[in-house]
Amino acid sequence: MQNFEKVRKLTGEEDIELINIMIEKAEQFVKGYTNRTKIPDVLNGVVVDLSVIAINRMGTEGETSRSEGGATYAFDTAPKQVYDVLNRYRLARVGGHAFEKK
Image 1 (cartoon, rainbow, N blue to C red):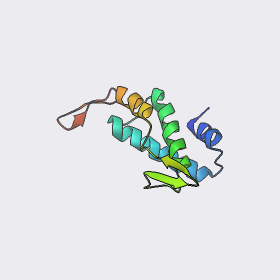
Image 2: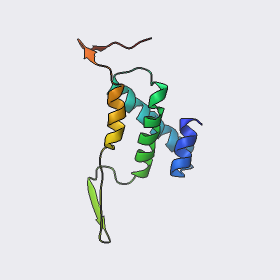
Image 3: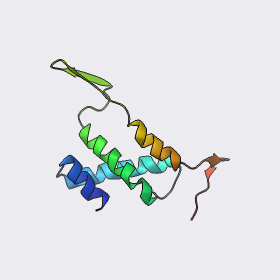
């Protein structure tokens, strides 16, 4: 199952364009954070997780917490486990350049 189908199933979102935008943003974040030009297959789960988080948080952009009806919600940028996985595949930059296997 591809990332698109996974995100659609997990969120129940039917807007194809929105899902594609969120996946693209997640892929760009993963590439930028890991200093890579291509996303290894092992990081596709992180792309899905970040896409689902972004879709679920729509309408709450910029908020760090919210209280409604006696319930308080706090928002992190992304769960720690996402960064734990990304950090394992992050390339070090040497002299301003990251060396990636071709």
